[in-house]
Length: 108
Image (cartoon, rainbow, N blue to C red):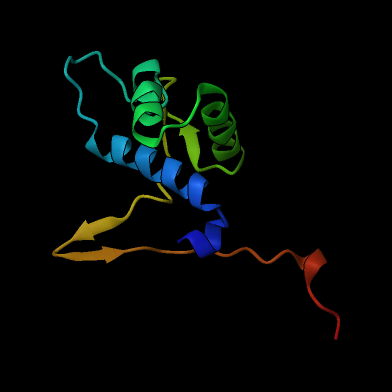
């Protein structure tokens, strides 16, 4: 997937940690909502990746700009459903949708 996303090694590492948090999230209380970039989750990512707060904030802003992290209906943040693999019966199904920009087409 990184060939499509064009992320650096470090960006891919941080995104994979956030993806792991997203996939492993389970509410403890009925009022809990998913927020993968909460203070506690940021601390976890900083600890596991040895990244500082400012650099993590830059990566998160970039992920939001690229649409990789989106706002959920409760006001928290989660990984875009487009990135989450569909795992069923031991298979992973990933669908890519590529948009062609008419202005960028070659006129050969």
